[in-house]
Image (cartoon, rainbow, N blue to C red; front, side):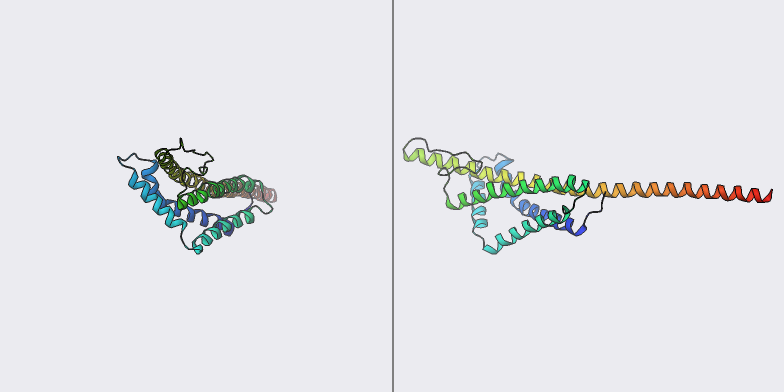
Length: 218
């Protein structure tokens, strides 16, 4: 296995851990939406909604830093996959696929969902998973009910997207760790084979020397 570029690996692991940190900071908001069933979920929906609105309305610098981190990870993959070996294609190729899945989830679900939350256009546009909710009937009560259902579904999809994205990024780290372990294991095996070969050569040299000395004595 060819040795990997440590700096390129750092360019991949650094942004991946950065994104996981962002997702971890959102976990307290998502926890009561997805993983528990409190008696009254409305306060938790409101907390998540306010958090997402504040996040979406953050200064442009925040989004630029995030996009720079994404580009840094892609640069790391390009560096490692330039003239790749078989091991690079296996580990780094699979890592790149997962990384691109994460980018797709970010663009298709999270970015679109943040816009829906900020605009408050629940039930009026397609949900982030691609399903539209039409208001049933023409009454004001039916419109409000449809709007409320769209709000909960949209917030749940955003929370679920964060979980999916976290699993994908953990998969990237697992593959990079697997590549490092496989490389270390191969190096250890090569060292062991070299040691055994050197020992055999040394024994043969000693045997030849002893045989040559015995012939001289005769």
